[in-house]
Length: 444
Image 1 (cartoon, rainbow, N blue to C red):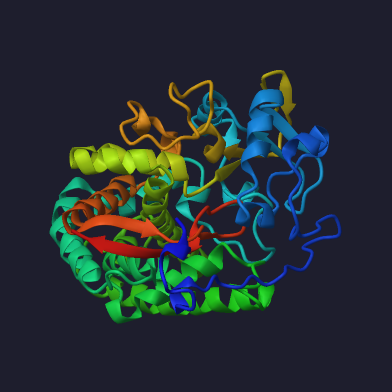
Image 2: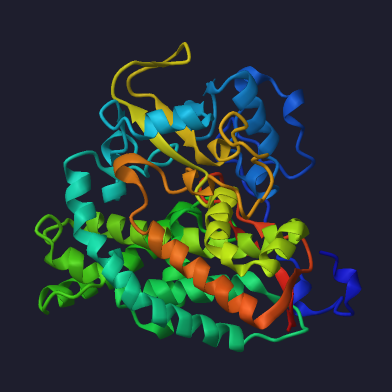
């Protein structure tokens, strides 16, 4: 992945985006911009794994590994997200994720992200609800990604993938994230929402905004700008929602919500919550695994060679990419009663982070080295990235379909996709993704 094999030193696609220094989020938080200390030098008692800059720099792996080995149910007493527990082993994550009677996802208890919601700006959404409301609303939107709809989407996804790939330059650098990952996921999002294709980047923008209130490169105006842009989103979708209520029901997400028995009378903030949930859910998994697949195959050239020899491995490679990448690093739960795990008592009302990204690298579960990208890994589909239990990702099969089609079309066209430099990553511990990755396509 060395750009010096090319003569494009001043090519715009090779200019890494600049990063704006963060302001402290609370008195106890000091943003990290220098060299990050190794986990072995940190005090285990106060170890905090949610520093946004640590995630942008990719310096979190040794912290999660240390927690798995030394303190798999760990309490962090002071963080800018408040005190929280970390569950880092595969088995324990599964236990918490499937125990919705003792661990709540409800926005009324803080929701699915550490730190909770903005006061007076709560956005109820079905993933942040407990039973029975969760399943009632989830069932409303499921038809949009049901197997029969995936069959309908497949030729459309393939046609669009071919058009995007045909528009790319060959033997010349470009940003894969912007030209491929964002484009393809934006097109699919617009279809799912029956949103104008020419305005699809608005959906991408709202996806970026909702999880980046404190990121000065995305939301420099902080909470005020964050609220304004989300209210703009609400105004747009309230209009669409009302239009859909006056038309016969169709299979797009807003129509299903507008006609659903349990969703047609949602409050405006509940509509906003479900819209941003579906936008983020439809954007981040597909968008970041599209980038991760190219990066991983460059990082593990033996696996790229294996794929070239046997393209039939693409479906399993898709699952392995989703495991290896883990697009959402964690989900939060709140204890509804005192619960003891591995001798540690999580008290009623305390927040717990289920670190999917750690469970997907748990050495006690995975037979082969979990840090390696192995496209024919036998149990790759057992990854935690989509969650388990009642909150398992509703669009997981669509995400897999998009990635499979992309690689079928890539393998038909290109001998090699070369990554020219280490990619830039999103900051923040929730969404784990890519913001820039220069590549060169080598045609067959």
